[in-house]
Length: 488
Image 1 (tube, rainbow, N blue to C red):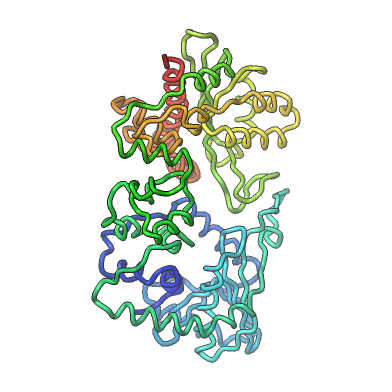
Image 2: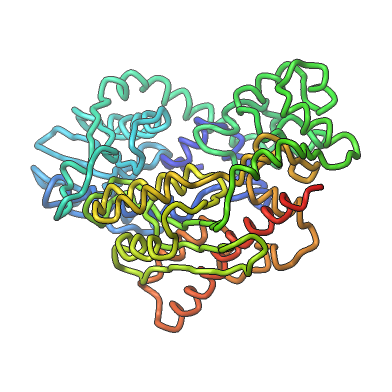
């Protein structure tokens, strides 16, 4: 088996991931997010400009070609190469950025995150191992990552966008560890029999394991991993103590909300409805009543002035509202044209659609409030009105978060994606699966990000799908609210 740096890092997390990729790939459940992958690609391309002139090694399925192309360029005395490719024994790597000065080599591994994680150190240490094995004099090893404090003003400043962390000492200190890990992976992969690996935090970190469902299929249902309100560290701790089933959990000291989830999962109970608490919540609301939901996208490399990396940029909202109790349900919406900064036009439409001093409902209001606060900071002339909206937002999630309304079907979650089907199991108009093209926030984000590259016809279809998705988000809130006010 030829080992790449990505496979090596998977082996660091768990050897069995590699083994299952080889023997049972059909069991893999993809856990990566398309928008995250897109951001990683963009960051990698942008970082190539850090050192000025460089020569790029073109990707080829034939790794030998990439290695041969690299060796030709390495004959130059002083050069920067991107995707320089090397093989030592059966270990292969492409270095994101390789700086050669005479006989000295510097390795730069580019990451789209805003900090250095342990797995990145394993990644670059593996690359150092290969280059040292080939007899190259590695003098520096660094992790290049996004500077979260960078704010764009005018032209993109690449030098300020990135941070470069020198991890040379750490990479050299891990060389024996890398050597031993390669031997371990090689031996593991030679075994045709599947190993029973213990479950642990490595199943969730540094990345969610794509085979977690496969490796836990033998566990009784429901089990500790079905708890929504418990940290992974606590779940694996209890699991390793032999506390696996919900019945086992009942014998331990656990939070009252977890107790409720377990009690309802094991017993056929009527919905838990705390009428007094729900009434208290409803008394904090008033008419006119607005229901607001934003869709946003994030960019690792900000396109617009005043934006930081990974800042939530709103491009769409849906707004249902009642002007008076018992009145007709009305609707407004906004969706930006692609390829432009959507914030100003969205903010102007929002202050037009939501009057001052009215009650606005959001589901998990911290998100909507953060978006509005950023808009108010960006556009001082709209600040007063935007902050008035911000200060009058209430959270529809509270009755469910506090378990003042709970059913077994919510499975311990207060997310609207669990609450809605639990309250309306047989209503096709509230089923996100019945939507076309866009079914969740991640799909909305990635769809809008790629919208400018589509044909006019495709854009029109996508606009319709995005509007229908966002409209359902606020309509769902209306239905949930109606459910609460009809509690007797």
